[in-house]
Length: 114
Image 1 (cartoon, one colour):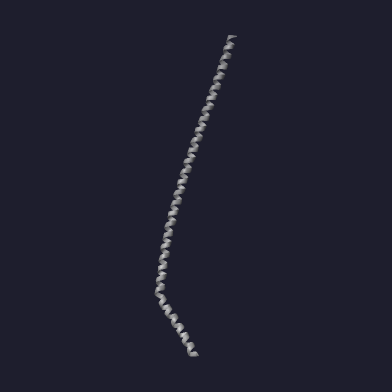
Image 2 (tube, rainbow, N blue to C red):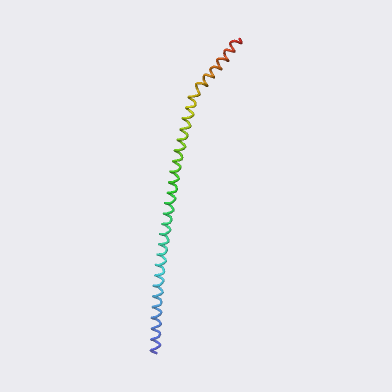
């Protein structure tokens, strides 16, 4: 009987030890899982931060390009306006003289026709 009791005591001790080992293994697995989740979240956050920085750089570059292009368009518009003013100032007196001459001739013809 003693050997059966000893065997039973050993089995109960082994069962208790197996439960302890199982609980410890579960706890370790949960710790590993939590650490993996933290690392994944950290990595995901790092990738999002890098993507935001890249997007900001692209937007800043596009904004700078658009500003440069707008300045170039403004300069070209100003040059064209100056050319138009110059042509107007060069040609306006002759055109006005021509119109005045036509009006004078028209009035003279009307006056002679009366």
